Image (cartoon, rainbow, N blue to C red; front, side):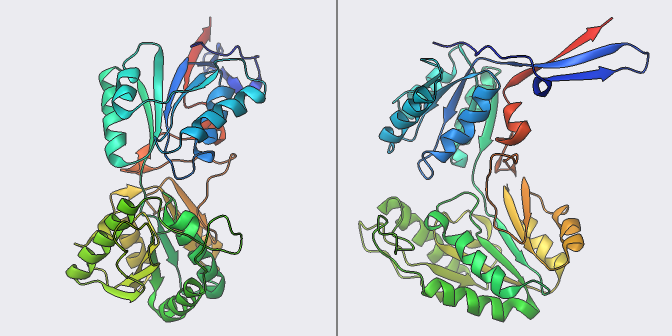
Length: 365
């Protein structure tokens, strides 16, 4: 079944407009049809539901191409929608490869595509969508800054900073990656961060007493270590961790880097794993400059006791979201997405529901 769901008329999907000449108009939002979702492995359930719930609420149907290493999750998600009462075929999982995905996107029955994944995958999908005049939504990588100002609650900031870097063992697009600290708070923050990081327990991920386990695959651990080594060769210093992974192993030592030069991977690339990049800055202007000196723009976190000041600084950050005194997270009520090479379009919130609709103007003459 490739169609759209019938939607009841309600205030959410209807906006009335009173025109200057006394006439009236309204905007109605109608579903596009079948929307293709290309989803990643790192949060194999949440990422899909984050796409599926708003998209189906708008009246569309979903076609899922999940990551090749999580086929059972793909099947389980389809089953969940069916068990929740959605009609047969409203949400379908296809176990296909990347080449078949691009072919599918060229099918006229597919009206748009949403992808969460790498820059390379996003470019390929957006290119195919553009060639076929179809809308695309991309949620790609991030190199999220975690800015700590001198007036912040330093112990609290350090506690949350470790969580923000180590969520899913650092394999998250919105995990904090670059820690930008005002110089008067730098030493205390670094000390507390390192203490908390060193106290984390490695173990079986099924054991609730374990804080982390390993990377998703051995090749990912090897790639991350190569980024660390290249950064060190450029002049960065390892303050903690940094051990080379064993050949064929996905294990990785949580690592802290500092004195990071601008021409190194730790400065300009996304480090998709448990490596924290530290920057000492003189003032807020320097902090904002470094925070924005990246090709990515997904999320950012600012820590300060002066919320009014924090809001003003948030407006200067080039990102899709800024969280004050909190780690960046996606939640159903808030629109989620990025700018620059982190992608475009929004999931979740009202914007997410209206992302794949035809906003039709109806003029009442």
